Amino acid sequence: MPTPIDIKEFLKLSETNPIIDVRTPAEFMQGHIVNAKNLALFTNEARVIIGTIYKKEGKQQAVLKGLELVGPKIHEYVREAIGLNKSGIFLVHCWRGGMRSASMAWFLEIYGFKCYTLKGGYKSYRTFVLESFSNKKNIVILGGKTGTGKTIVLQELFKQDEQIIDLEKIANHKGSSFGSLGEAEQLSQEQFENTLSYSLSKIDSERKCWIENESRRIGKNMIPIGLWEQMRSACVFSIELPMTERINYLVSEYGKFTTEELIASTVRIGKRLGGQHVKRAIEALIAGDHKTAFEICLVYYDKTYAYGEKIRDQEKIRHYDFETLDAVEITNVLKKHSN
Image 1 (cartoon, rainbow, N blue to C red):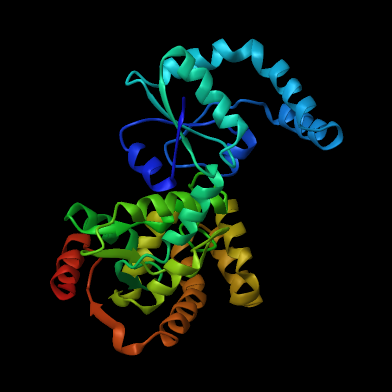
Image 2: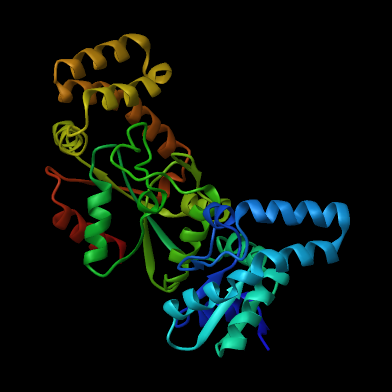
């Protein structure tokens, strides 16, 4: 018989054994446990049909319909599972830890696998995820105005064995109006939280963890409140670079995109930048003068950054001046002063 286990034991076992999520593809797409495989018991349409029958005719008629739909495909489920795992153990879950996961686990156990089901299903996992953001981490913030290369410095910190959480990478967004350029489609808020929680679970709380300074919204994703509050109270190590260095960096990062894409991104901050500034920036972009366009946009971004610093505890902000954007040099200085 399948063995029901709680979420902590389920996740611990998942480090060495595969997870099968038997919910519909639509449910899985909305959000899922990191590294889970979707082996849907019902299609999106079939689940609607069964749910309607359950409401109108009761549980027994819904079960009969479910058996009618699933029965001919049981061998397909088992064959697909065989291809996912050679160890003989599966972790199976559905939404609430009910009939769908129990049924799939039963099919697999008849074949010869050992299955564990998740008590409370995916719903219990989501509770675990949301609570996890209040777990205390030794966070330090990597700060700096737009164009100071915080992302490449963050990656250099990682190369030098520092712990990091790359929020922009998880969100598939660089955090500004231009942040979606060159990025994959953003995750749902639910999956952003799931992936972020998973990343945080790998962090040693006794060691410092660098996180780039962000506003709470990264594109369409929001940093969960528990983590956000920790970020806002953490020490900030802010990179200072000359304007020319910042503009050169932005040109190298964003100059490769089409004029149309850059104009659209500029227009999105039009109200905050001001009509005349937007007009000048667009004219510069059309003329191929990326430096002028980005310099105009930095007026807005610098004001936004200055306000964000102003509402922080000033005693926790440390500024470090550099002449050039040398990620190795900057990392060495930040590591030295953060120890």
